[in-house]
Image 1 (spheres, rainbow, N blue to C red):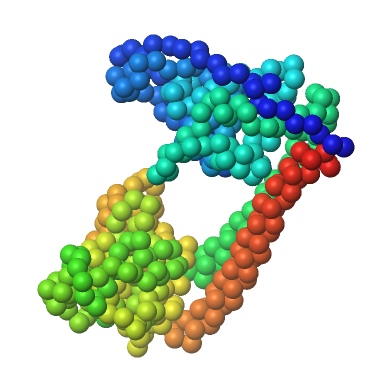
Image 2 (image 1 turned 90 degrees about the vertical axis):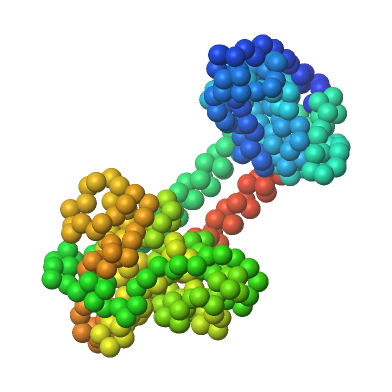
Length: 399
């Protein structure tokens, strides 16, 4: 089936539902995400917070764009959740002729690369300010079969999208179950009972301290900060200390292969643990990162790392801000972990051969988890590629 095309102006017209902006009056503002991700309510502002003298009210089923970023897919059909929101002049709004076009038809077409490219060709300006004029926007050609065919195609598209989302959800659920299995195995290894009378982190380390220097400059001494300690992953820094400051760092404070890096402050970061391997460079930590150096005569660095990043170790490291912790209290602040706090963290300490067995077992489980994660990511990429293909066929009359 060949679908004819028409310019948008045949089924859409710009609309201004103007309201005056008054100090002391609240206005729900609207935004439009890139790449067809939809319109959303940004924030509620007081009239005194904007320089605009007037705003325009958006209604459900309106077509709305961001003039600057329409070339990046900043286009949406307004839903119930944004009905009544106020738009500035940067968000032209268009009323649809519902006797000629289904909002859902336009919703799916505005998610296509074809539509974004058409808008990009009509955008003008430089320095990232490529605004599209509303009258030019209305010249964009769109495919438009009769309403009955629109409805059939949209129903088919949404049926297929629903199946994609179902598969996506199942993949995500499977991964969560494997992750939960990993946590359950860790709990079996490091039970609450194993913490009783266990040595502390101070007992099993030869060095435990947060960094002290952070002034940056040009040197060969790298600085490890919070962003370089991701959960279970060390990211090599590109930041260096100032030469005079680097000279003050004690030899003990320089990171060594096998050191465990612990994020000690900043909301959302506290408790992250990484294993340091970049021994080919000279590096130390700033005040937000601690180094825990295993006493290898009694504990494997790999074992200590596995424990601290595992479920039980994370219980001992994470913030107690909710106040519902029942274990030995660690002197935790909301977003801060001092060395004194870390010293008292209990570390279950089986014999070295048992430590090796535990590390090997958890490594095997982690490998399986990593494999599943890779398979999931690949599957997600394949699922993501399906939608453009479905939409392409739909708007060519091939679905």
